[in-house]
Length: 202
Image (cartoon, rainbow, N blue to C red; front, side, top):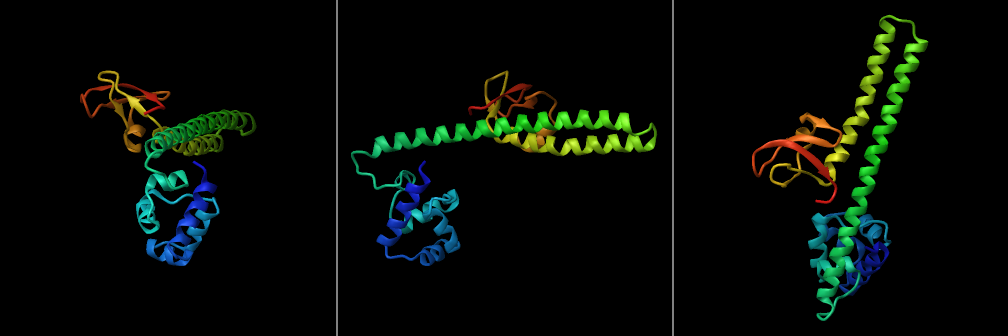
């Protein structure tokens, strides 16, 4: 989606409806800075207020996301293109999140082993060495919890039994036994517990 094009379109529609940024912001219960941000192509309206914005500007959601008025002849074509663009955008974001998760894990693992190795070499055996190693292990867990959050936020886990795509809560994923990104989860459809493989495309 072209944020600059959408921003210009929002500004045009607002002016067409004789609304200032402040007036539109007041109707949507947001700040005029948010309106300015959209119109300058530096952000997009949140999905929670998109319908209200469209109502105020007297346009459809498809027109808003296309950044132009859509004629009846082009309506179906634009809808298909919009769905394709949104799917591609979601896939791209998922890939970035997935890559970020692996980078965090690899950097954390490297730091963990390096920290333990340096502690074993430089700190004499005893309580201080044990406490240092424990602290390093605790610090290692923080990025691991964040990496898990990223893992859960994209795609789904496929049930080995019925093929249902499970989207667990963070706590369900956290406490499930796992091997890499394959987790032992209970399927809400067939109610069986199986090793569910992570799939990025939902």
